[in-house]
Each structure stands twice: as C-alpha cells, then as structure tokens.
Image 1: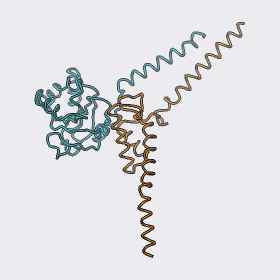
Image 2 (image 1 turned 90 degrees about the vertical axis):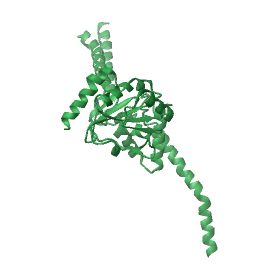
Image 3 (image 1 turned 135 degrees about the horizontal axis):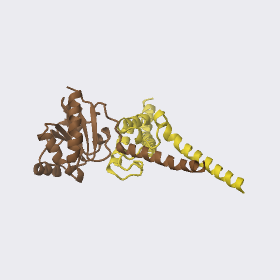
Image 4 (image 1 turned 60 degrees about the vertical axis):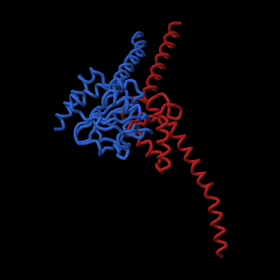
Length: 127
Length: 176
C-alpha cells in the first residue's frame, strides 16, 4: 500500500516540471499578446513589442513580472492606463471622449463619397 | 454651390489641423494631474539602504524630476534646478533613470547638488509608475501630496520665470 502511494508521488514529482513549462508557455503567450497592445511611451508609433528603447524594454519586463505575480491582463492594462492614460493602449477604448476619434474616418469617407457622386452626376448631366 | 462642395475637404483638413495643433500643446498625457503621488519605491543614491518612495517626499511643496547624466537636455536644466533650490528654497527629489553611480557623483561634485535626495531607477519601475515618456520630466507636488503640474522637457530660463515660479506661487496660494 505504502509502495503504491510512493509510486504515485514519484510520478507526480516527475510530471511537475512539465506542468510548470505549460504555465510558462501560457504566460509567454499572454505577454506577447499584451506587448502588441501597449504603445511604446517614447516611440508612440510602435508597440513595446517592436520598440528597442529602454523604456519599452522596461515596460515589457513590467508586464512579465505582473503576469508572474498572477495579475490579469485587464489589471495590467489598467495599471498602465492609470499612469499614461488611454493613449498607452494601441486601440483606444470606445467612450464619450473617443466617439469623434472613432467616427471621424467614416465621416471623411462619407464626405468623399458624396462629393464623388455629385461630381459624377454633374458630368453625366452635362453630357 | 460647386465651390462649397469642393471646399468641404479643405475645411475638414483645417479643422483637423487645428485640433491636432491644440492637442500638440499637451501631447504627452497629463493623466496624473490632481492625483496623489503614485506608488513607487527606489533605492536612494547616497544611502542604498534607504528608499525613496511617497512617504520620503516630505510635506511641503516639492518637485520630483526624472533625469539622467546621459541625457544632454537634463544637463542643460541643472543650473535651473540649482536656482530653484538655492534662490527659491524648493525641495527637489531627483530620480536617475538607468544611470551610472560614478557619473552621477561626478555631476553633483562638479556642478552642484540641487537635490534633497536622489533615487536610482535602474529598471524603470518609477519611470512607469510616474507615466514618464521622455527626459527630463518634472512634477510639482503640493503639500498634500497631490500632483499639480507636469513639465515636459528641460526647464529653460524662460520656463523657470514664466511657468515654474508662477505655478509654485499659485500652488502656495491654493494650499496655504
């Protein structure tokens, strides 16, 4: 009986490293996903995933530490937004302050379409 | 009517440009204004057994400035910081980002020390907590620990006289 339990314990001990590896792989995936969402505070056109600046590197390490400490993606993003504002996230949130930002491309395209239709219509009428 | 239609894209472009220029006045985020000093903790340069954190900042009006000896514009504003310390009695706490201890000691020995204390931030922990986007950046904090003003870039002579000193006076009046 004791031998049976000892065998089970041995199997679990041997399996433990592979379980931690799975957890590390999942953390890496989460980290990469977050890196691509967070804007570099110095090179604002890049994410921290693509930026070589010290600030981007420090921010990547910040994200990795938070993941290792068990923080959720949402908490990590919110912590960065508390310091940097919504602009730290590549895709701005949808709220009252960003409504014009989100609508503006559609407004411009709509204007361009209306003008194009008007010009085409006038040309056809003239011919 | 035709010219009005053709003018719409131009009007939209001018409107967008004006909005962009206005936004450029405060292109870096002012997220921390009117908020309490963020949580951070770095070792002090002169005594690494001590930490520089919100409790170490003191209860009067003060400035927290992020700088580095490898940052040329940080070196330009050093004399303004000395003037703020000696002529205007402002307590200044420096946070040296990714800096070298020997270079920092040389700077303070050769050009004077305007700092109440200097914290070392080798891994950007304080840099991120304070929402820093470039250097130097300085914050003015009132007696209650609220951040009242953020200055992006170096403090020139003109900025010192026309912006920093008036803001300090305003903070003194608002928080007696």
